[in-house]
Image (tube, rainbow, N blue to C red; front, side, top):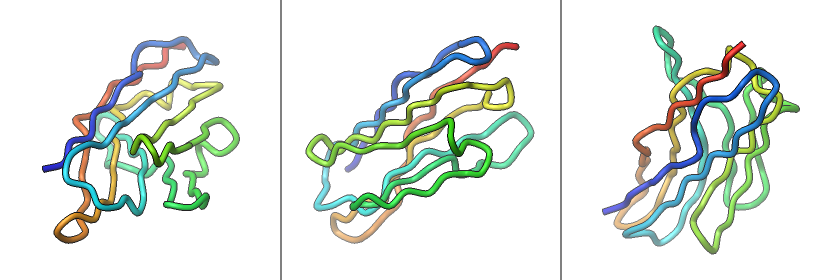
Length: 118
């Protein structure tokens, strides 16, 4: 069994910053990729950023230059530093991890709400 526990969401004014954290625990042999997705009301879930087991990262065009993803492999934890937040960043943010235990599976966190007021 694997758990992803997220923290760090909340309400912030436009231009402000938030830092999300997601810690993976349980049956883990290795973690290939960790990332953040978001889903706004009435919209599909979309990739925000992801980081592979090395240093390779991918970002959505809408967050490049404002968000930074990082990872602490020793703690099985991924972070998302969000700066210069905009009202359109408002969404539920979900942590995702591709984990190898008995096989290779995708796991999701419960989601954390980020609300940016104008």
